[in-house]
Length: 228
Image (cartoon, rainbow, N blue to C red; front, side, top):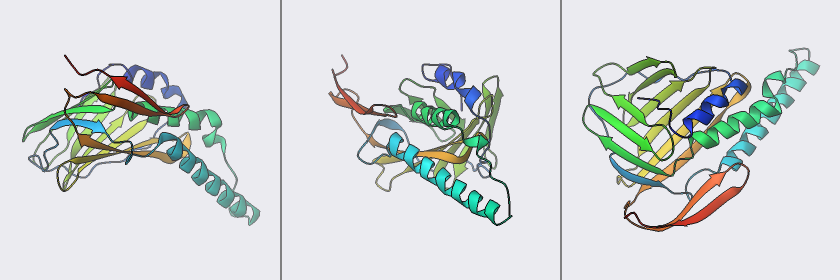
């Protein structure tokens, strides 16, 4: 797996000051590739989660946490602390999730021993498969771990400043549907931010309407010309 300083990754790093850390650890790795993800993929917004809806879910969960803390405090069972869930921290985490999950197109090349996931306008994900162990890399941009969990491929990235990004890739039974569940964690926000994206195979030479979901503007669509 490799973090490359391509467009999008730079803004991720600039926003790190608002975030801290908590991590998820993939299970022990297995050997050769369990599933073939190779091909060209385009996001299907009709089946993907909306960033704004995910943000609302986060706010509701934090509100429930605050209410539980308040009840415990009234019963003498604890203290109320909301310092870790400031408005700036919540928005920074949501904006980070928007950036991380923004790529509409994926170009995946895979062999029995490695995979490269090129993501439009963002950094690529790379993983080598080793029998009985995970692929681990330490770099100036953070620590990276990836590997198989049965038929699912997992990536765990911890960036400077502590932000943890966890991707779980699952291929549908017919091989035409790719789901990527992305979870961001920070010790500045007491609940993880998760966004599920669904991708479908597509022909890169075709033309059509391109859309994207944004936190501030909702769904924005444009037309594109076919590649020459």
